[in-house]
Amino acid sequence: MKNLFLATAFSAAFLFMGCGPGESDTPEIPVPDGMVAFDLSEYGMDVILNIPDSTNGISNHENVGDGVMLRVGNGYGMKVKVGAGEMEYVKTELIAKSEVYKLEKYVLEEPAAIIWRQYIEGQDTSARMFAFVKVGDVTYEMESDPDNKFSDDACKAMVESAKSLRAKPAVKPKE
Image 1 (tube, rainbow, N blue to C red):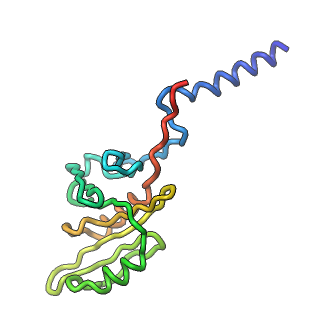
Image 2: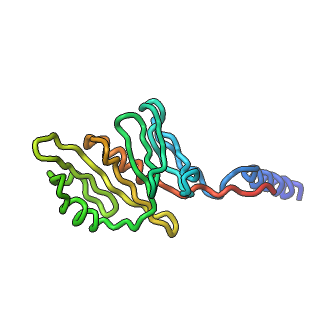
Image 3: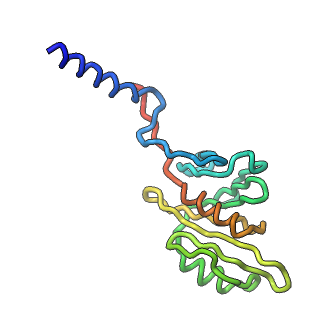
């Protein structure tokens, strides 16, 4: 009987150890080296996104009308907004019918992410990316900063960043 009591007491102690103040209901997702988990709730989105840390350059985040532009150094610039995630629209209307940029080729084509190379006649090509992630009932669109030129590798890193978008963990009330 004494052993049963001790086993029950230890089990209860371990059960309640993880229920301290400020802990979330959702297990924390690891953040890779060189990245930080960026909370977008300040911009009206209850999500978290892994973005490059300060070792990659100066970090600048700003509201841009329908979303937020996240910039870190010269190799990361991605707009995040709530949207429909209409990949075919982006490919057929925004890329194929652009009167300014010519499509060179698709570097990556996935159901929820694309990278393409584009150019203006007489100028060097640059890569762009578009991705979308559904979190709960909300679809978030992420696209590379149209005011900057990126390499294929920079766009691949931004796609990986986009795929890390997740719900902000709910905080348990203190019991």
